[in-house]
Length: 340
Image: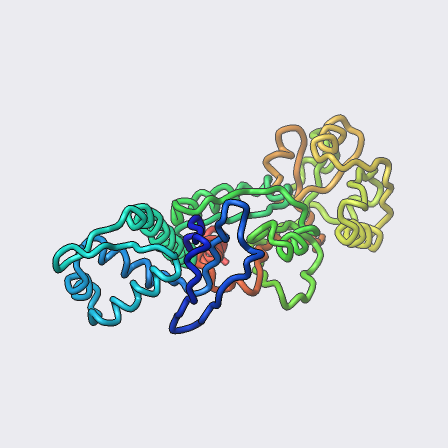
């Protein structure tokens, strides 16, 4: 919409349109220079396209043929446009027309407006098709041990090169609110708890990660291939704080208490600190199987054959975005990377 022109006071015309009629503006709208602000309620992109066509053809008949319209409606549209702008945009020359000085000025703005409108349409279509835009993926830090997420994101960027894909670290329990607020487009969670039944969200389990035990390398169980919960009954347990994941902590404690006594001698949230304490002989702790390679750099990792505590790697997204092409690609990659 052109908004930079202002109509002189002497041109008190009633704007006539096929859709609206706008009467004279009050004199109170007139500024101190004798002009009233331009307020368009009837100008449409069609008027600008017709104007540009006549300006380029310098002839109403040729412009009408180019536009595939009759000459009479075209002339009326240009007359309405001149009434709305409040100045003559063309001057007659022989059988044709030439732009007036005001028309030459108006042509520049009209072309720019049409170009912006075309770009807006192209951007909207490209965004709907997943060719451009911004896509923000939230992820839980626990996924770092799996090594899976970088591959998914690199393939997502390769399939949608015009989309800016951003990774944002965000705890699993905060991702639902981030989805609702629009801070993230999708999220990768690393959780023990089942998903809340929220109709606004969709989810897919990406992988299941069992827990195993980290032992000092000279531990009495270090030579075994696997261990059982009963074997751990007398051990000193180094424990992540319950505040980090209450449901996981409670499930693990319940599994150990069922089979024997577990003495918690230290609570620590940092996995590297826990691993250092284990390697130094301060006790044992539990890590996911995906972190086994990290554990083995300093200690021994063993599967616990009867410990059925599983952490889920899960993708979540908004139900309203089910048809989004980038979301569909992410779902496809999430399925194929892990074969689920």
